[in-house]
Structures are given as C-alpha cells and as structure tokens.
Amino acid sequence: LQRMTHGCELVTIGELVSTGVIDLQTGDEVGKLAYGGGDVGFVRTSDFGNWELKHDPKQRVSDEIYDEYSGKQSAEVDDILLVRDGTYLVGSTTIVQADDLPLLFSGGIYRLRIKKRDILSPALLLALLNMRVVKRQMRNKQFTRDVIDTLGHRLLEIMLPIPSDARGREAISSAMENLLTVRATLRRRATLLATDTEAA
View 1 (cartoon, rainbow, N blue to C red):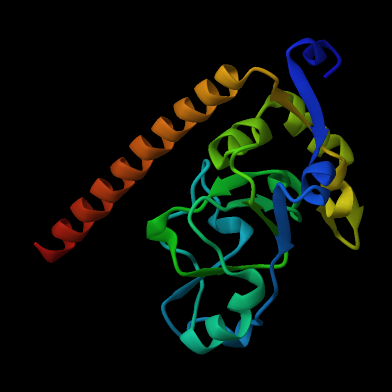
View 2: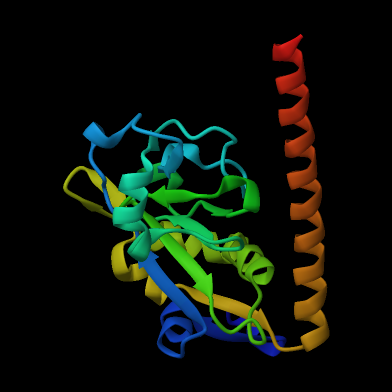
C-alpha cells in the first residue's frame, strides 16, 4: 500500500461511505420457512461464483416476502455483493446483473451500491476489491464471532488504492466492464443451450 501512494489515492471503504460515494447495506434472514415459496432468488454466500452469481439460486422466496424486505435489501444492476460471514468465502465479491433480478440477499452479505459514479464506477470498485493487496487486508481483519469468521464492521477499515490518473481509472473500468459483458453473454448462451437440450 505504501508503494502505491505514488500513483494512487488510498481511501478506506468507510471514507467512501461517509462521503456518500458508496451506500453500504447488509441483508436479512427471511427464515427457512420462507424457502421455496416462490420464484424470487434469495442469495446466500453459497450462490457466489467468480464475480457473478450462480445461475440458479439454491433458495427462492415468494413475491410477498420480496415486498416485505425489498425496501431495505433489494438489489439493482451493478450492485456489488460482498461476503461478510463465512471463513473461506469472506471478502468474495459478485456484481449483480439484469438476469439475476429480482433478488434478496442474506444477512451474511454486504451490498455496496455506487451513488457517485463520477468518482467511482461499479466495475472499478469490483476490480479494486479483488486486488491481492485488498484481499489480504480482508483476510487479516476477519475474526471469529460465535463459531463463524466474519469481517463485521472492519470492512470499513479496508483501504482501496484508487488510481489518481483519470485515464488509468477509465482503462481499468473499461477492461472490467468488457470482461463482465463477455461473461454475461456466455452465461446467457449456456443457459439457452441447456434449455434447448432439455426441450429436445
């Protein structure tokens, strides 16, 4: 991090939250009795893939449950979900895509929503959260609460090295957006192929 100060501005997630750049929210536990009641995905940490949610969430809930909880913990396209609780998965991230909606997310997950995109884009934030130096901070700051590891509010202490140069920020953001677009397209094609195969 010290070496990065020459070309980056070191900013904590807490500072980005306090200045209104990021809106940070945790999910709720809807209870096991709500599982299987409908078609709305209820995302848990086990539904995380590599920067994207698995195509078919293990649990789904009803529209009524969605209406009850969506005011606090619904998700939008480009929201980033980050695992707060769960030992090996702590710090894992995924970005919400249109095909994932509507959804709710569990209490072991943080939702990071960019409010000031002129300062930080969702794609750039996703790239920063997956840098080795950032992941190591998360690993160092997680602790055991009850019987499970968690980041808790220590997420706010995580320091992000944001490139000072606007062209550098744009280049990283553009590269990540292109990668996410390709992945989303491939996932959509795979889903259609699987559907066609089942129909046949």
